[in-house]
Length: 323
Ligand code: ACO
Image 1: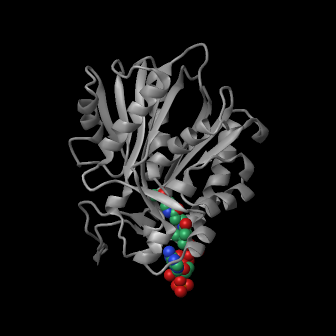
Image 2: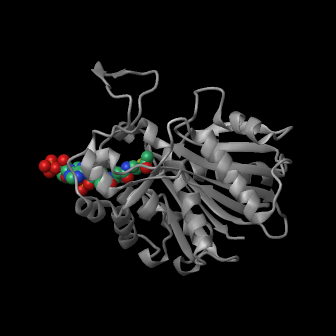
């Protein structure tokens, strides 16, 4: 049984707003098409010199302001990101320096849009094992920096942002009810950003930016997520009605509607950040949680089903009691 819970949350998005009208001037698209296919209206774009560790720093500061918590005594900084400032040093190590935290571990994790889900599970596992007591978990991305703004099929989707939570030891009121992960690596090349490998099977992989087969990802998610969330609810020994809120990765609002039609939790009980922030990859779930705390939907004692999925393809879900 889990011995940890989430005790605080904060978020940050960059100031610059990119609207559907702006995109209309950049590529052959329309506000109507984007809203109809994705439910997105705006996304935030990091400034030229603003990188993932900068967004993460602001999200942590927001959390500290809101909850009056200290992060100076954390045992570990986990940053889920697929857009690190550098390959190394890690974004987490840069964040440690920015925040001036002494005696902490620092680790980046890349599971694309599922990253925050994985990072939460690892924090819970480390704390429950007794190894550590307090872990800072962040999902932060500057996806705009790897987006091709001449490709209308991808540039309308992505945005930048960061969310931070604190996971702490609590034997009396543990917060994690169950977790689940899975991977379909065979479908991985439906969504990629090249690294060292520039060719596959003799084929040039091309672009420095995100390459995506949107249709295939859509089909995979609509097949996988309903079944995975069902298994997760069973693993937690709950009924679907016991899940107050479903927080899927905010990839596309229409896709989330299709998932809910086939899955255990109805669309009315979903929380997303997709409409005004777009797809922010590893940041999308904490951003959705923060929005729901702010608008009073998400309350202490509620059961929240978080489910990150995406590039890999891979997924990580947990059901937690909200603090
Ligand atoms: N504006 C206007 N037309 C467009 C646009 C656009 N922005 N983008 C594509 N089109 C056109 C295509 O060219 C195509 O035209 P054609 O029929 O003349 O060839 C037509 O619209 C249909 O294209 P599809 O790609 O089949 O459109 P679809 O309905 O599948 O919607 C979308 C595309 C929104 C990308 C959808 O497939 C999707 O959301 N997929 C999932 C993507 C996703 O979630 N990615 C990330 C997940 S993991 C992660 O978050 C890292």
